[in-house]
Each structure stands twice: as C-alpha cells, then as structure tokens.
Length: 210
Image (tube, rainbow, N blue to C red; front, side, top):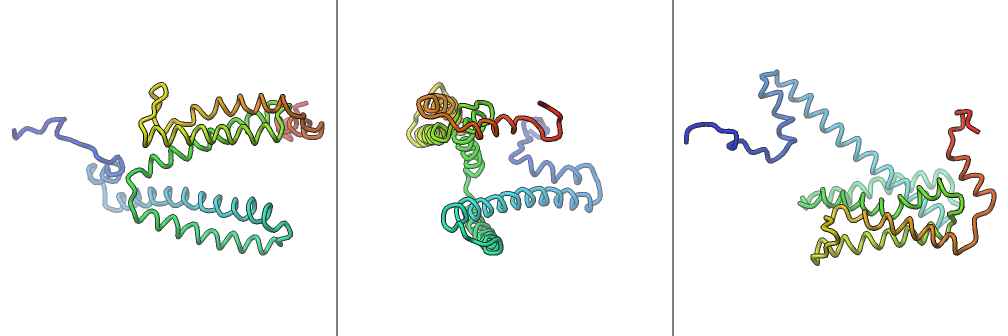
C-alpha cells in the first residue's frame, strides 16, 4: 500500500540483526568487521573447547582406562592430537549437510546429559549412601528413559503431559534419582573411605570449613 508498517519487517535471523546494526547506525565499516570477528571468535572458542573435551575424553577414559592401562604420557598425548583432527573432520563433514535440526540436536545432547549424569552427580556428592551399583543403574535408567521419550515424541507422536522433544530429560532425571536411591539401599554401602571422600568434596580446601 506504499506505507511502511511494523508488520512489513520480518526478522528471520537474529544474527543478521547483530551484524547489520553498525551499518544501520551509520558506523564505519571497520566496526562491522570487528563485530563479525567477535562473533567468529566466540564460535571458534566454543568449538575448540568441545573438540578438546571430546579428544581428551576418548584418549583418557576409553583408550587409557579401558584399552591400554600401560600407555605412556607421550603416547596418550599423540592419540589425543590424532583424535582432535579426526573429530574436527567428522564435525566438518556433518556440517556440510546443513542439517536444519542442528539446534534441536544440541538440545537433545543436554537432555541426555541431564537424564544420565545429573542424578548421579548430585547423589554422589550429597548422599554418602550412594554406591557404584546404584549410580550406574540410575544413569542407565535415566538415559534410556530420556532416549525412549525423545525418539517417541520426535518420530511417533508420543506426548507425556505435553512435554516437547527437547525437554525429554525432565522424565529421565527423577527416575534416575529414584533408581539410585532404591538400588543403593538394596546393595552394600560404599566403604568408609569413599564416604569420607564424599564429605570432603563438599567443602573448599582453603575455606576453613570443618
């Protein structure tokens, strides 16, 4: 109708708004370049941290603790560097497909971590009676519950209390807590040394707490 109205403005990506703000404000182009560089630096720092975490976890937890307990420090370091490159190549190859559900995949990862690890971490620190069998069983129950609801709600129309797929961990967390509590009470308690360790990690080493 020749009149610019508010409804005529459609923002499809907030990233574009951030990058376009310096240009809209009439600032020099160098400011736009600095904003773009800042966004790229933030993305790269996050990606670097995740790559290092993945490579170190596989090298230390899988290779050293499971496959080869006699591996030297230099060998473990070399394997970490190789895994770093391999992980980066796999991530780059997946990124070429430009998956539309990449944000949803990130939310799924947080749901799986919450359902599997959160109950064990909390109970392991704040309940001395929690033991290895209870923690492992609780992690499996929380993880499987989250996966079942995640797959069911995403592909088969499952809906519990109207919960969305990305919030699947809300069911795994309470079941994980309940399982750890029940299984730990039905099995032998941890040693006194482990219970003392649980108490000690609750306080800072230099805080003077007793």
